[in-house]
Length: 580
Image (cartoon, rainbow, N blue to C red; front, side, top):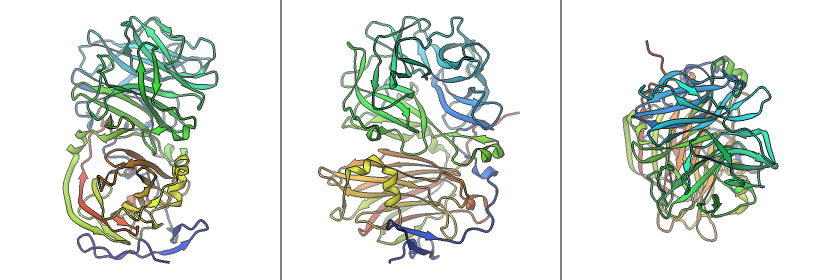
């Protein structure tokens, strides 16, 4: 059996040798055997708090709420427990920024102080009405745990930070009434849009007759609402839809569209919903006459629905950024350690880096990329060109802060003849396939990619990698982010995340990978943002004196070129730092 990870390292990167003991498991996958560390340091370490991802100074955070750009300021609201690091006592936290990177913390914007939200101020959205009037609609839970939709308005629009918000006198503006509606599964209203009749519309996530639905409501003034006699869209392939999002996109154009303005001809619409621990979406058209969303493709098996992100990313919310004419999406990333760990740390949860989101030129797939402002944190660039990765090569990337970095790599295939055949059944459980086709299992083309947050002897490491398969019509690229050996700590959730994207290798031989490493966050974008994978990891090496390492590798039979590799250390952002 050929050893893997025991590769000679190019002098360009390092002259050390990594050697490990290998065994073969029952399913044929090569795995590593290492002695367990005699002592695992405490998880209560500042080294696990991210340096440039959004999170409050302490306590629990989950869904992003009502993001908006208003009068030169970006607003990020979020589900927040002011009393501890576990879910509960939820209010709307509030932070502001001018650059989406550095954030100023403010007092809570919406608190639990009325009968219609006394048990929680849950997720909602912001809409800017005519006359430059911001309004927020959100879900509140009453004493009977009915889920009700409520309105708040800024108390003083001349305050640039919109610190104080006033609840509407007629709250709740929407109650869970109507045939087939479950009052405890009725939440997360969307941003509003205007129909042909000039009336405002929103969608509310719901369980309708036991199935998932986005219920449609209409209003003249955003205060009095009437339920439309049919949902915006529903599906009997799933149950309750959380955190629906509805927005317009132009194929092949990475500019965003404002739902409050006229939507140009040729535009598509996206309906996003959160279920099964993932954010999924459909692309289709908004039939203005029927007042309904019509998907381009209807898939009865929801496992095949497209995903916003294939990793630890949920409850996302998008908004139109009028400053730069783009649509930005945020998502919540939870901790994957234990609740007792979170109590000990005193904090839990982060938000992914804000992403620009658009529709590809074929009108079939959303693509995402970190907002350009995050590049302002880059420093100490290293760059290499013309590298060649033969089978078994493992090259260390030196000269950058491996725990706080931004890495961009182009992989170029020297041949596509040896691609293994694609099996469509893999799409039903991509994580299972990533476990079986790990970074140590050689293939025709791949695995090749990046190893991050690796300990000195590789007993801890996270591998982000690609494999190339040939389908009947085209090539399918598998991207995995394998956390199974990311930490020696017991009791962590360490899956092998993965997603497929279609790629025309006859025309384009380069496959790009960008990975943002931020201590306990590893956020990767493959194929120009065709597949995104957010992950959380807690390597012991990160808090020990030895530090971590980063490598580029190839374990496939086919040689892979790296025409361009660039990496930067990332400075620490000012994220919700208390001043004065």
